[in-house]
Length: 316
Ligand code: SF4
Picture 1 (cartoon, rainbow, N blue to C red):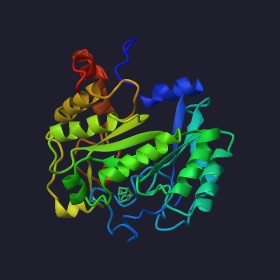
Picture 2: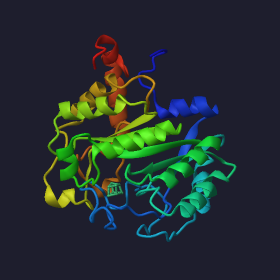
Picture 3: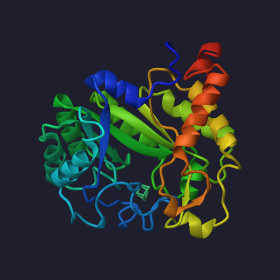
């Protein structure tokens, strides 16, 4: 990588795309999740906080399509809060909470376009499960993608079937593969979520997951630090589980991950993001800025960067 840049952050990529700072607005459009409502399972993934990883989104009720705020209201409220700090920013509407393709297509269409019709919105990001991308949903996404900047986020978390089953994720790797193929063949950018530190996984297993997802032409990757949160099933079944012994251990693993991620893949996340009030372990996880600073310092100290190991060992 050039100019002292050590990884291809989505922030830099969006600045290139839109010519200015670009901020994601977290939208909770009131979706639920098939792994909670009984369609696929009850109780959700063991690590799920219950609000679908949308702690920072701006609504409360999440069991139905009943909203405290409309999509438009949520966008306006967040922009008014951010505009003093970043008056010239571009905005991406990020449908974050729960499964954002899990509703009848006319409902999805209305919600997505409610965001996209706002002239302040430059693009859309949609987080979902790979098993919620039927043909009609894919047609809608393809249509949206034709005229708007868009990516779709898939929560894979791990490629290892035993972990996936133990965590109750509810779909298999071939479902993820099919979703990636369906989206990419329609020209849609894919961002894959992995969790580092799932119970029972060694660092080699986590690296295998990274290698696997990066062997496909995805647009981006999110590496989540495993957080045990108070409202998760994991906090009941494994109350003493601590994913990493120290920040240093975590930082060292993230560096190894970055070194095997091709340079063209955008990096969307390298930590977790859980409010301190919900966090059980690791207790240092809420220190997001510290973790990111340590990752940057360690990359500089080691004089390494994203994709560095791929140059030295093409087999990786
Ligand atoms: S798929 Fe997402 S929202 Fe649904 S239970 Fe799992 S983590 Fe929670």
